[in-house]
Image (cartoon, rainbow, N blue to C red; front, side):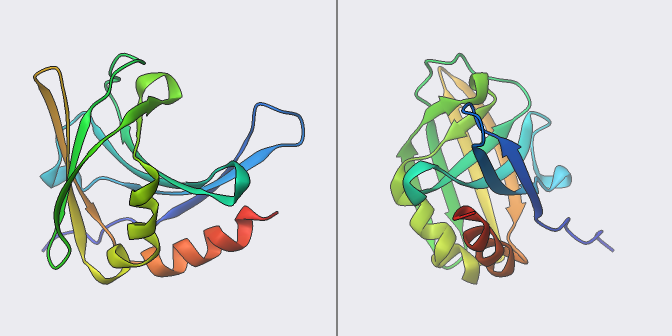
Length: 145
């Protein structure tokens, strides 16, 4: 019997400016179905009330990388996006349009299969989305604080 997937973790971190903090929810990868270099998914509050979605990696890509990220889920199809790097190359920042999926479409699917490709290197992972709706709503409530 498979172990239950870990729940979403809520964190708040200091921003670069004094008094600035960022709230985020994170979900670690399903290690049985993910490459060792795939850490998980991060959904965080960004300045101006935006929500950002990032893929967390163990092995960073060069900071100026522009990886292609493919996200597949049952019921929501497969889409590929051009992304940029954040957090010294250990996190892949997905384009703004992806944040809309976290607020709606992804809340109705059980999991995401994610592939990050850069210069012939590919890192794949699986994220269980159980509990996303509640975690996302509590994140939104914390974004304005």
